[in-house]
Image (cartoon, rainbow, N blue to C red; front, side, top):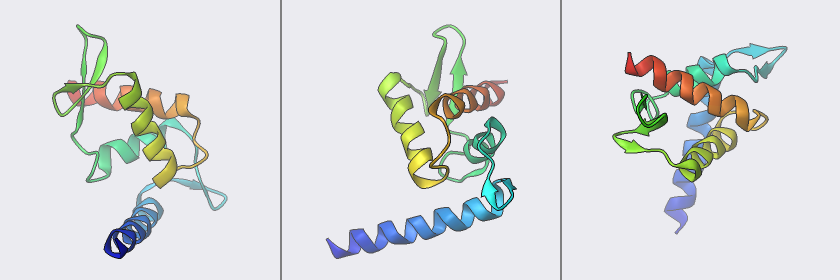
Length: 105
């Protein structure tokens, strides 16, 4: 059990370092905009290349599986918890759709 807690703490430190190195900041705070979430989805090793957009279904695809509504919410919550706590969920969702669309072309 302790190992999992240590691993979780390390992931948090790694996430914070990655965010400082890759996300845009304004006045010492992370910018809460679509561009920053796009950077996250397109550049972070955990998310990079995972998402595509299916025009026929009008849905985001995550590694071949359709992202039903709760999976999208789960991803948005993960982005908020790990990287951008104050990002509105609508902005995170829009950035996910844009990133998936860009990756499909």
